Amino acid sequence: MKTIILGVTGGIAAYKSCELVSRFRRLGYDVRVVMTRNATEFVTPLTFESISHNKVVVDTFDKTREFEIEHISYAALASAFVIAPATANFIGKLASGISDDMLTTTVSATKRPVFICPAMNVNMYLNPVTQANIEKLKSSGYRFIGPDSGLLACGDTGAGRMTEPEEIASAVDEFLTPKADLKGKTVLVTSGATREAVDGVRFISNRSSGKMGAAVAEAAMERGARVIFVRGYMSAPVPKGAEEVFAGTTAEMFEAVMKYKSEADVAVMAAAPGDYRVENYSAEKLKADTLTLRLVKNPDIAAAAGKDKGNMKLVVFAAETNDCIPNALKKLRAKNADIIVLNDVTAEGAGFDVDTNIATIIRADGAMTALEKMTKRELADVILDAVSEL
Ligand SMILES: Cc1cc2nc3c(=O)[nH]c(=O)nc-3n(C[C@H](O)[C@H](O)[C@H](O)COP(=O)(O)O)c2cc1C
View (cartoon, rainbow, N blue to C red):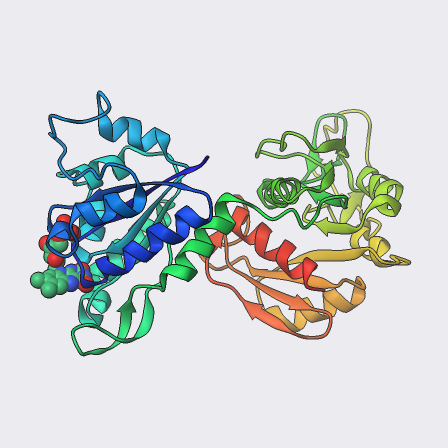
């Protein structure tokens, strides 16, 4: 049974977390509640103990504790942490590295995913300090659910309402119990950079790290797929469990994709194969003072994958620097793709060798979704969701 540690802080919405405990329990989770001292002013620990069927922890220095060092054992016990409601105060403390109670200490000590569900007055939420704290936590890997907008307990209207327990429960459940919608399907993923030899020791390559392709492969495997992972040179690790096919040059990658294409239900072309190869390549190390390389076009792997693709769904990527949408649309049509994932590589937090991406997903029918900055792993699931919806 998976355990969720629910952190409850001192906001009006604390009463809604009683429903959240029930929902998690009905979904089959063991729920342990950790409350801040101020949260107990709103709802008693006894209420949460009765609903969760577990002891509620408030005090770091409680002499009747179950575990030797409770905050460390809780941090490791959890499949995930959910902080609902999360006050501005809690968010500020976590963002500043303050661990002065059981909840902040436990959350700081965990390596498990933490979902934060803010709930506060609109002005507290929009306060630039709160916003900066949220941004800081997001960039450190904390996940946020909400807040929603609407009428707040204080009578103001705006952003700051805690997301409804039903929605929080299903978002966390979806994360902890991934879908198996690709069971029985084969996903062909290309990843990484190719190298085009200049001479016996030198090559032309590009900055692709292979992180996006690795993320797609991991996500597809988690969703039950068999993954054929055709990869060039990568700085990211090759995902365990994928059927790895090494292709060091564009020509080799072309061959591999042509070979495995017929087995694939979905092909995601996340590699950055070199567009050109050196025609006047020399097997011997070149020593001339000046050198003119003649570059000729390599075969277009994505376009070849899109030709006679039958029922296979094809996803391609476009890394653009200008006229992004028209260029991406042109590429989508040229490759006969079903989806193109566009990223403006000039934007901070997008493109090569970073863990995040800012993408727009464009379908062949012209439907477009501009996404917020997210990790490549999260984007991988959004892409696979879009494929499932085709
Ligand atoms: C009636 C009342 C309601 C409150 N509601 C909220 C709230 O919704 N969100 C929030 O950030 N703070 C709220 N506060 C302020 C927090 O309780 C206060 O900042 C407290 O220090 C939070 O402590 P904690 O984060 O350790 O739980 C409220 C205070 C009172 C008296």
